[in-house]
Image (tube, rainbow, N blue to C red; front, side, top):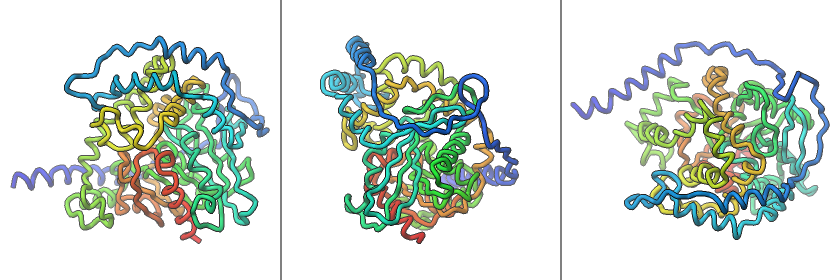
Length: 452
């Protein structure tokens, strides 16, 4: 009887919370069609689209090397914990610093990035940077797709993913159509300008991205995203459904309790695994274990959602601190089991060059603080919470990463929030386009083909 109580009490609590949450009607959401986040007084946008190339001043590289040479990694590894459970292992951090100083070549990475056509344009007072990559002329059918990144990544995550979307046949994907890819940097990330005023939330970003697509001549388009990118594209679809043909995500934004039936099936799948269609999830689906992992691994989120400027100041001043803070996520979020490894399993999926280039984009633009502010804006904008319960009727695909810390959402749950028409499971973690570009691209093509 004691074991039964242990099981039923938390289930009853979860269902009760979901019931109360769903009895509260969706708040009326007031959406402005325009805002201004630039410097100074409100002024009309300059709608010109300008070509852009990445070109970092050599003085910035010299300063970086000086800081790395003089960086202080004085904490020793715990004698009984030579792993990543306490964070970035200092032995591994010393090795990474040595590689950064003596082997890493920023100019080589800069050239890789500059192979993609890039542009900037002003939207709501901010210069928005974006890639616009078109397929070869041999493809007679071309579909526009906006792909959105998250934190602590940036558009560099897509450098292996974009060529698969724009030229599938060349990369072994059978398709008679290709995508024109638009990949914007979230304002405050990459080479997009940092918001100068408060209030630039994920909802504001969704509006800005829609305006970008309209400016490029697309009134209807496809969307793909993970992490913040999934939330931004989800909000864009909820608020502007007439502009979205279909939505593909590798992370389902599902707020706990947002759907009563979804919550019911979440717990039912734990108690009776056979009710889940996924054979993989039948083995280990446990909403409580997932919640426990999130508690352990989301301390960064609480800091960034409350005092981002305080935490970000030190990261913006220390390249080795910035690298430890960012790259540690590419260990844990790729696979929780990597925490037990001395090197965090970082090179199992990514090269040092790839990881350091992600960091370099933050460092050379000095925008780690503005990227962290995005968390505070999310929790301050209550409209994001109010929209969590709004059903997405637009056809939606879920490419579920089997090692994804923030996902592993059964279709039995997600179908009550999204019109899921395509579901696939991929052996990947959080940074899907970076880690598993071909399986993810294959999922996108199959989703769109099936719709047609």
